[in-house]
Length: 346
Image (cartoon, rainbow, N blue to C red; front, side):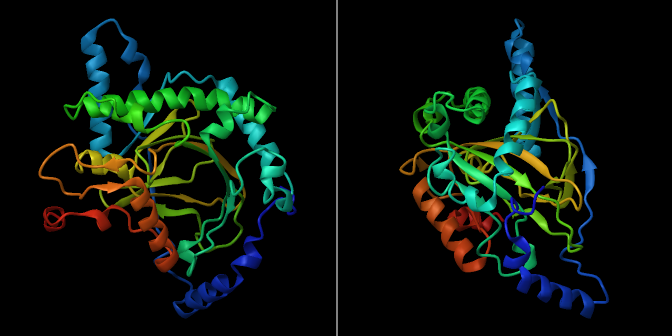
């Protein structure tokens, strides 16, 4: 990729590089915080066509697999999800085109893509050490920017095809997960609307440094559900049984992960799992994520008693996350919202 397109990572992070280099030299060339080996694995795979089976036993078994993966892994893959390989190919092509725009132009994206101001993001502005860096760039786009564009260009048309399908899928999965907690509810349909949900186009440029830098630093997602499509480069890792696991890419699958809000709503039954993206020294990586989010005023409370989390609004949660990131360089998340009972169980 032309260096004119890339964000100025080296210039922005030079002080942190130099500090890390000195630390590694003092430790005889080793930094245990940065070099964490991850074993590769394949996430649970769920065939969504089974939800349409005429046999109710098959349908219920599929729902149970979704709930089990959400409890045990917090992540799973789905196939036969309704998005064709043609759409995925178009997405890759369109993402390459938009990210190849000059950096200066991308920072003024509202003038050439009709996205909301501030949609383009890169790096980690609050990073205070190398572990908090994110060697990536992204467009974080409100769903209404896409659905209201009437396919005004090939990018928005292609994204709209993806967004329409994953929006329906997210609602279906949320309803299944609620049902498996014993709740048939319209909560998600009423509170997670197109004007509250987001898409994120991600690009992870090659990172030629030897520091094991994150493409996206370890975090959990501040939503109910995330639906991700990634290319075949790899780099996504998650925590399972207190170890980092590298997710083996599957070009035919979508990756689903539970967010913080679903963990709180399910009273800790479904797991919002820490995950990260590691950089590749030679290859760029692309992905696209959909975030099922409620309105800021939506109150999240556990569906079971005694609750391990106190009630909170999504606005309150986002503000707490934002404050922690600004002050500490990273997110704390749900532990900030534990009740006394929840704290004593940890």
